[in-house]
Length: 119
Length: 109
Image (cartoon, rainbow over all chains, first blue to last red; front, top):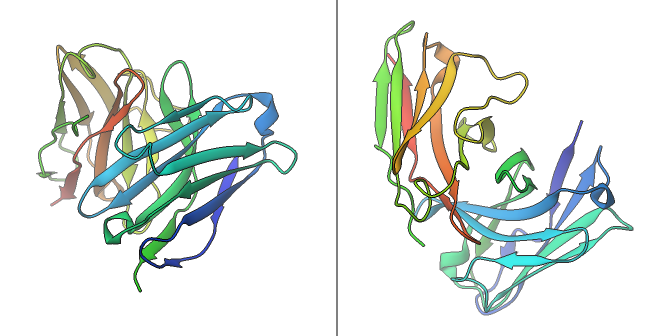
């Protein structure tokens, strides 16, 4: 059974960088599929942030691209998200998700990590 | 890059059917057969219930069905059960972007 688990600080100060890691179990990232970050807030609903594959090809939401970086560590079966210069508007539940291409859907989701931006 | 439009709420009695619409444009819903639907219970992560417009993942009851006409996709829940009370979101590929719907809260009366 594929499982994803987010980890990282739950509180980040404004203007700092949000960093999250997703640990995948039950499936090797090296075997394929794509891996994504999605966030959810009451104000914006569900919002796709970024996607990466095992080869390191990256795809970003253009509205966040200047602040976002996604990376993969196949040796640890993990992928990570960095979002810089955060503001209160970045407060959300962040999900790591497995993404199925080229049919385009998200089949396995982590439980979600609440990240609050506040001083 | 706009959100897909869904009605805020829908409801039905147990055993009845409810249909939720998801309206986009020719650049997303209308342009690709890549619409998916997700069910989310309070405090839980979304769960995939429909992909590729009308396909169900293993384990999802056949009470859930999807369709699409032009720029609008629809999710129908037949034979409503108490556990179907949840938020439902559509999503669509849109050329290097993934648009989500605004969400619909389904209540079982």
